[in-house]
Image 1 (cartoon, rainbow, N blue to C red):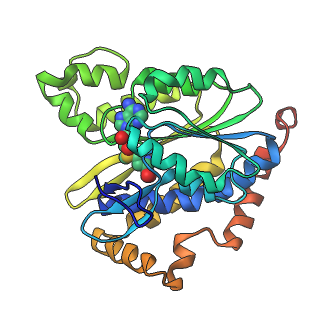
Image 2 (cartoon, rainbow, N blue to C red; image 1 turned 60 degrees about the vertical axis):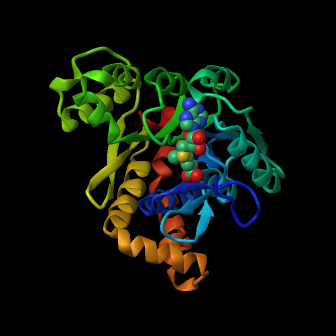
Amino acid sequence: MRIGNDGLPVIPVKVHSYRKTLLLRYYINPLTLILSKRFTRTCYIDGFSGPGRVLFKGTLFELDGSPLIALKAKPGFTDYVFCEKDRRFRNALELRADAYTVNRNVTVWPAQDFNQVAPSIIKRIPTGWHVFAFLDPFGLELNWTTVETVSSVPHRELIINISAGLFRCASSSHTQDTVDRVMGMHDDWSLYDSKELLALYKTNVGALGFEHVRDYPVRGNRGPIYYLILATNSPTAVKIVGQRMSEVNLTGVTHLQLMVEREAGRLSTLDDFIETPQTKLDAFTAQSESELRPPHLHQ
Ligand SMILES: C[S@@+](CC[C@H](N)C(=O)[O-])C[C@H]1O[C@@H](n2cnc3c(N)ncnc32)[C@H](O)[C@@H]1O
């Protein structure tokens, strides 16, 4: 197990995952700013949280993972729920999150399978809260039933990581059960190509009550390694995430590696690309104004 600068475990990730970092850091600021005007309680759920720090393979550099990015966001959420199956990662996250627990509720569940605990987590969330769930497994660990469970709260937005491994499993007769579990249905998956499978997944997510379901491929050296699926009812979310993903996708892997190294060396010149500039925050807030109106005014 790799150990970080603070003496706690870190999770090794490929450098293309820095795109995920860039997306989350950029998006969670306007998201929480907009949500804080409409909801008194906003809950971030990270179902596959990792230990809170990631080490980029091929570099010596570590940065915050999704839980710490969410905890450091401004204004941030009022409530945070983390789940991680690996006990050492889970314990490391609890220690790292401790510094960010003032004026908010932070729960790190005992190490376990998020698919099993998701119904208990969701049952505890009152209907007036807004949930943003980041579901980021390494492979095909996210069951369809869990996506259904998380989507069952009235106000929610999801970002789901769908591994391109799904398409490889679909084409093999030995892994049809895995695809059944991820897709939530049984079929002869060898009859589907990757586009059809992704389209079916998105259609089924949309059927859970999302107006917009978008996929953003995250590419490695040889094509997409995974797809980030955004499921939301907010056109502003689609706009912000779409813009950001087109920016980060233009950045090649070698460039990303350089950015990680430069950031870890704390060069300030990249700040505008790495974080959300104030001018953009103001623009996003203005764009979302129509979404902030109470529902009866939309008629
Ligand atoms: C891709 S990593 C998450 C990285 C994290 N989002 C970040 O940005 O730092 C996936 C994590 O999910 C954990 N995991 C795998 N299966 C799980 C399950 N069924 N329930 C909860 N956690 C699981 C793994 O141990 C790993 O730490």
